Length: 321
Image 1 (cartoon, one colour):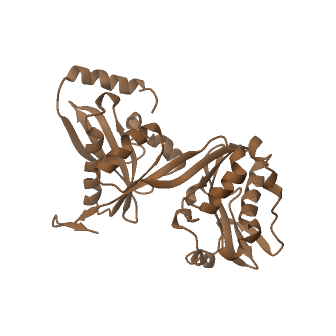
Image 2: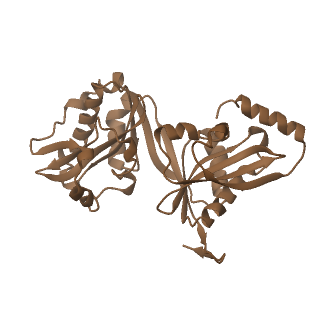
C-alpha cells in the first residue's frame, strides 16, 4: 500500500483528537465512479485507477466504518447482472488496523449483498505480503472458500520478446486463416458454446477493452477452431488474455503459431509492453517455463476467493442456495 498520503495522515490526526469512541458501520448505496472520487485514498486497490481500464459493470455497494464522524474504513463491491458480486476494494486507515474493522466490513458487506439477492461473492487480488498477512486470514475467519490461483501475470517488453528464437518457428499451414476477432459471426458466437475452452478463458468477456491490433480468430476450411484474444490494459500495455485451439488442431504447435503472430503484430506497433495472463493450464504453464521465462521481467500471482451467500426473501426469510 505504500506510505499513507496526506489525507490519511490528516484522518489519523483527527482520530487522535477524538479519543475512544465506538466504531459506527453503515451501508452505502447509489455509488458511482464520480461520487467515489473524493474517497479514492480510502480505496485499495484504487478504484479510480480501475475505472481507467475496466469500466463499471453493475451497481456499486459500499460499507463504511467511522469513528466520531471520521471515515476510517471502506469496502466497495460491484453487483453484477448475473446475480453474483465482486469485492473491489477494502481499506482501513493504518492507525485503526488490528481492531477487527476490516473483518466487520467484510461481514457486513456479505449481509448487504445478500439483501440485494446476490448468490455469490468473489474477491480477486494480487498476492502480496499484505494480502497474505491481512486479507487471507480475514477471508478464512469469515468462511470464504480457500483462495485459488486465478491467473499469473507475466510482463515483458518489445526489446526482450523480439529476441525470442521461437517467434518464427511455427508458421500456420495454408488451410488455416486468421480474421479480426470483432468480425466473429453470429453463428460462430453460438459455436463457442460447444468449443471446449475453460470458462476462465471466455473470449467474449471484457469486450470494451478488446485489442483490435492483434485479437483474431482461427478458421480451418471456414470453420472456427481457435482464437487469440487480447486486451489493452494501459496506454502502453497489451494483455494476452485468451489463447485457445480446438483439441484436434493442437498438434504442430498451432497455439504457439497464434501467439507468435500476435506478438509480431505488436512488435511493429507503438505499444511497447506485454503482459501474458495464464490460468491453471498445465500445457501453457509448461510453455511459459520453456520459452517465455527467459524474456520476462517478472511474475505476479492473482488469487480468487469465493463465498456462497444466503439470499433473503421479501418476508425476511433466509434462503440457502
